[in-house]
Image 1 (tube, rainbow, N blue to C red):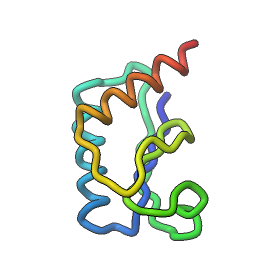
Image 2 (tube, helix red, strand yellow):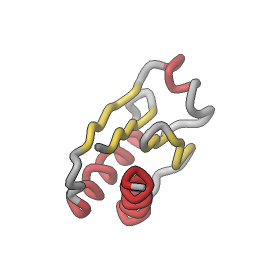
Image 3 (cartoon, helix red, strand yellow):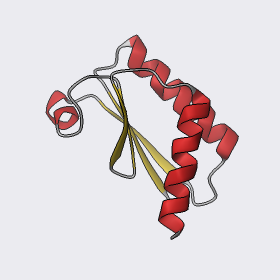
Image 4 (tube, rainbow, N blue to C red):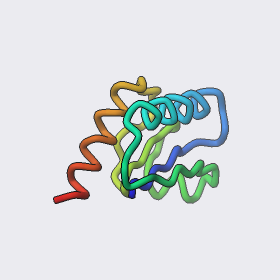
Length: 86
């Protein structure tokens, strides 16, 4: 199962990262399922990144301070799935 965290205070950029992540998940449809969490607490966010928005997959920071597109997120999700299987 994939653990995905969208990090940010809830601004429009964070919402775009969440939307792109959901779009990527819809295209990929991971067999093992996933858990998508929005993290808005500044202290928790600072444990991962310094600049929002951020994206964490299986506890690894994959993006910080920018809005990745859905295809880029899909490649990160696919890599995380491959790594989890091995």
